[in-house]
Length: 118
Figure 1 (tube, rainbow, N blue to C red):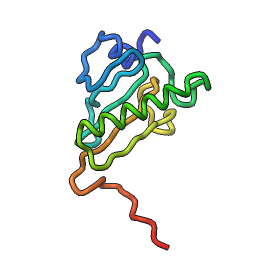
Figure 2: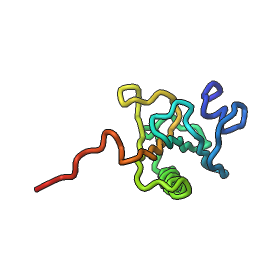
Figure 3: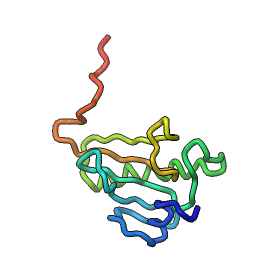
Figure 4: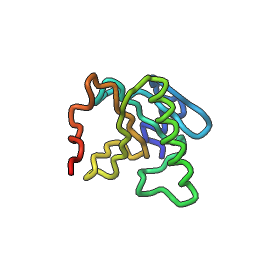
């Protein structure tokens, strides 16, 4: 997709605060963070959303999740959230598959669900 902002970032046509990069995946800090640590992990290959992923690309989802785990470790996050938004109704703003890594709240996430009690 020629006008995809994340494709342009992955090709270094636009700047980013890169946290991690390899042949398949790029991770960079969100320019409008929703948490003290807010990193976006994207495949370099353009895929519109998790809804559009093919079974042959399933290992790519694992790669995104493991990359997020490694970044959380390097950022010394004690707890964090991983989030895929899918479609406009699901909150997706950029039509390029991306995983949000959110964390770094002192005292825990402000919208954490209370522990389940029997």
